[in-house]
Length: 300
Image 1 (tube, one colour):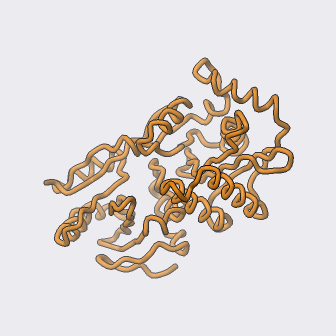
Image 2 (cartoon, helix red, strand yellow):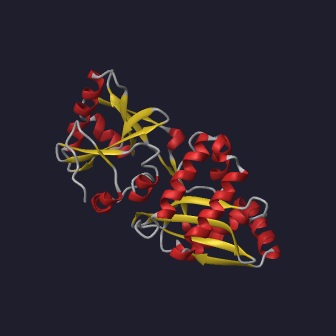
């Protein structure tokens, strides 16, 4: 593993840091979707992700939509006492930096330092579903999903296939076609997501990620990928399908949950980012609960 710089110097995140972060996340058993190495690495080039060591802890610094922020520090309990010092350092340089991704307990502890304040960020709350619900789709609340599935199963002779390394080039080609159909190069959000997707696919064997595809007539028409967030929860990282095939998204979701995620009690499908269409879609699957996230800043 590459050596990590001490604050205020930073080291770019690299795949060689995987073991370090996997150790932290294994101890932490996080509920926040961003806190797994696959997610960190997927977006590292887009968000200019860098890491540093300060007072026994590792700090992750990111740049998203020109907003600079840190994730909560990973390491020993002394890390909370370092947060205000880190923010004060940037304040002296007239830089507006904050911490993002605290759950409710973490936000409370941060505020107990006396120098920090926490604000809930609803747009980035994670949607968490019961795996049993997503497999059974039972009850009136899932009537619409079952109707789409019935149509898909009735009209398509399909294969559900777990991802193997030799399938990666074909999945990347499907992702390329999916992106071309949506003019990803004209939409920064989709363009960045495409970069993250390809990053994961290109390092599929090195990252702790697993996935599956749906093939119809021998061709990939949908794929999905996930990683373990904690012992009880899988987090779905990506899910893409051919929108011209009715029920394809409902099918890849149900088949993946049933055949590869059933050992997990919960399935985290990440946030909606404030997008009303995405929020409606995520709510339509009837989440069991949301994981609230908080932004932590210096008190005024």
